[in-house]
Image (cartoon, rainbow, N blue to C red; front, side):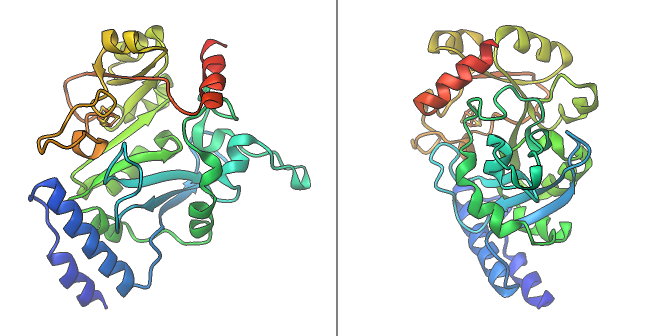
Amino acid sequence: MFNTIKAIAKSKHTDTPFIVRNLVNKGLNKAITKALKYKETLVLYKGISLLDNETPIMIVMSGFTKDSSNVKTGGLVQLYILPVHETPKDTYFGTYKKGGIVPSRLSVCGDCKYNGNNGCYVRWATLGSIWKAAKDQPAIPTTLTREFLKGLRVRVGAAGDPAAVPASVWNKILGSCENFTGYTHQWNKPQFQNLQDLFVASVDNARENEKARALGWSTFFVTDNEEEAKNEGIRCLASAGKSDTHGLPTTCATCMLCNGQSRKQKTITEVLHGATNTQHKARIARTA
Ligand code: SF4
């Protein structure tokens, strides 16, 4: 079996154009997954959250055998940071009362102002099937993770904040991918400054943007309106309707601006968006 996987993995592309590499490598990942009788949702890591230092959490990977249906992110492999023992819905909405247990809200999103049903753009209630598929799985070996991610582009934090996981784990897991995006709301805490080289800081007003930049972060600034977004930094290329080099609409997978690895500090802007009631809650949370 090991030889079969090695043979399949030998065909991986690392330097062809993204559009080809993505298609070929995901097809080869599918073959490896089948050979190992794996699911197409896998656990890459299990450990205790660094955000509350007590809750077991996990990194869950999807979109590594085929593209996700997210039209904005495009063909990125999706990594979710989820609690192991509570459903994502219960964690976000805080509704789990059985046995008097209160969900550990801090575990995957920390003190983000949108946490706790306050306007997060992630649709936590839809993550039940991913969580269910993952919760009882052991983490796969890191060598295999690196094989799966070889040459691909990755979205860290399709749900959850990467600060819940040690930077050393991210460095190992992401070592073979071609590029990745990721955002943290924990940029203001001294213990998470080591994530500056990996991710961008999520900020929600000009004061936060200034502060995060002064600490050395590149930032992703969610503004109240379009005018502010145009004035405060580089408008998110997908939302600005820019085309990629093939004349196709830009997606995160073809853009990849939102990573912290570039030495050149940047501010990328996006206007607050989402369903009307989610936006309403978010606007209240932003001004609280
Ligand atoms: S700037 Fe690029 S990578 Fe960042 S959110 Fe927009 S399209 Fe995605």
